[in-house]
Image (cartoon, rainbow, N blue to C red; front, side, top):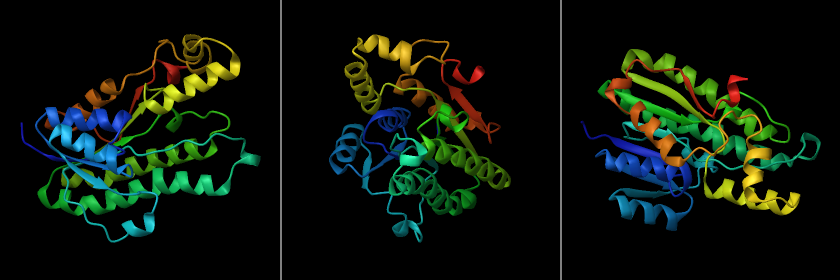
Amino acid sequence: MTMRTVLVTGGASGIGEAIARRGAREGHRVIVADRDKGGADRVAGEIGGEAWHVDLSDTAALGELRLECDVLVNNAGVQRVAPIHEFDPEDFRLIHRLMLEAPFLLVRAALPHMYAQGWGRVINISSAHGLRASAFKSAYVSAKHGLEGLSKVTALEGAPHGVTSNCINPGYVRTPLVEQQIADQSATHGIPESEVVEKIMLTRSAIKRLCEPDEVAALAAFLMTDDAGMVTGTSHTMDGGWTAQ
């Protein structure tokens, strides 16, 4: 296998950490990008990679960026939940900067190197919410829908240059963020955490369990390979059947 340089945003925890670790096990040079300097340093140190301490919501600082990576994994994200008429406009802007504008700027920065070598992979960690909507998540849902469009345009433009672009669309993944949501919902509703997962979070999922970060990382690892050279412009659901309905 050819060693590639893999840049993973939001790589200090959760899905990003799992992808960074899988990339390192596959023999790649991995750059762990995260605003959490301690977390990025920890993961990079443990996998023999490099840490990039960066706040990707500061998009003004990314305009002239140039990246020499072979694989770009856009994963960094946050969540805010509120009805539209109560949604803080600055929270809306933050989510769109971090989860749509920053991926655009990173793709823009990475493509010249990928084009020059005639090979590249863009992997966008989207969500079932990139394909479906839920109430109270206007910023997250609209940003993920935008990421889907960006990914498809990247696929079309990148195709003549050997660059593929795809989305991975998990449902609820067992990450620290989701684990905290489970605990909060359990306390709010006065029910066991196991019931929160099945009765609240996974009501639309045919498979009644959380997706594991390593499962997302396994799909990402395949999309990095030469074997995935004909896979582009796609959205790969890992949602237990949520979007099958």
